[in-house]
Image (cartoon, rainbow, N blue to C red):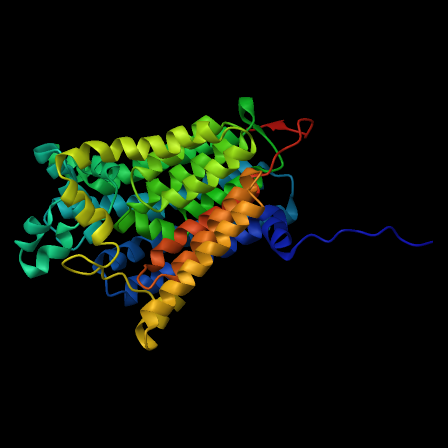
Length: 429
């Protein structure tokens, strides 16, 4: 008699669910502890070194907690101390100790006079908030930037969308630790992720089969070192990422209008959200809701740009277009050894070659969207993840930290899978 064939799960799924997910939890925290310790010892950036000194301890404690859970799981698999709520508790502890605690420590030290406790983007955002209050625009014009000392011209540029200046408004009112822009980046990130988790969970807090994937997605956006380090030392990318994840969660919950608003708010902060908005508009079009998505996805960024455009059009163009394209008074110092940067700097005519490869990748994604538009939130997340990964790798000038976007989108995708109406559910303790 022939045995019935069995379907073997992919390697990633088997690794993700080994020992109820605890094995990968332990691996994540242990590797992160090593990364933080190495950063504390070797980084040439003082805010990064300060982060590593605190975060290494936080990750180590989380790894010890996961080790205890793993050992207990082997002896008593049904123990509530090894279940999903307990894993959520360890994740929350890890985020507090590896992101929020270093952030607060650096904010307080900076308020006490330390000038090496924030990356440049924090200063740029806070200055833009002050300019928004004083002049009605967060941007300095070409002539104003040219008048700055050469060493300060880079900080004169604000390569963000106008909405980012809102995180600098508290500093414009009061100069203290809690008005540090990173504090408000963290608040925005936490609120957006909490809303995303709520959108993906069943009413009444009942758990489903995708809750393990949801926890993994939250870990990728919070305790992963690339995210925790970014939030504690700079932070401007985290609320943008969290809002994009919220938009995808709303898409999975079949709320196209809310998805458009969430990604529209993200787009009013930073250009990185605009490709996500495009993908979600196409997703909405497959459900005859393209206009509902576009109303927020396009309307909110335009609404943020219009007042600034009316106040000083040239300043807007100088900061949002000329500088990112490499035509400002100074060039961005963003450099990471990715293929695009290596091609641009080592090959004859390398910048043109890298640009051609980037355009080719963009065209390939456009063809994919045209021929096979995303019909689910999962497909939209995967297209955003792989598309941004390709763009980041091929950009002549980019930052290693930008990888947090594609990594989070790709890990978030399994949490967006639809759950059958009759799927079993239990009430969370």
